[in-house]
Image (cartoon, rainbow, N blue to C red; front, side, top):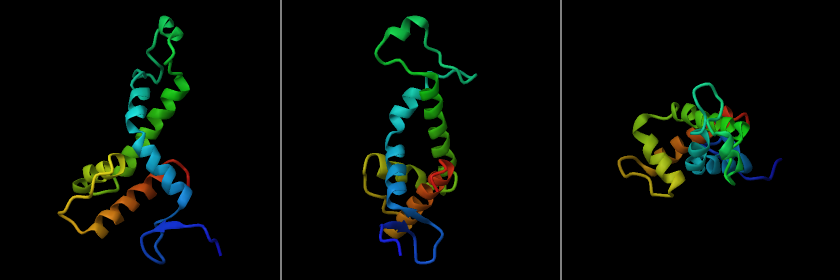
Length: 128
């Protein structure tokens, strides 16, 4: 039997994540601000918009890094589609800013939707 901690909704549930995947997904969501800045240098064709003069700057973003950031942001957006709209903002606030869940639903409901979101994100990122 695997002794590593897993995060799951209930015994027998298919919403089961290994500890490492759970925390990796949390940190990808917490990194949204940086990912948005990286992805913002892409134009509509998927190429970066920085000029040759900007190549000398210390914070040059490569095309690959910008595309990867855009990919991870897209995965987050697609995973959020699996969560009812009323919970989305509260979930992101809880994960990114560590704010408490809203009080219009039971904490177990919030935790379940958080796990549904993180499980969906792990699937989108091909981590499980």
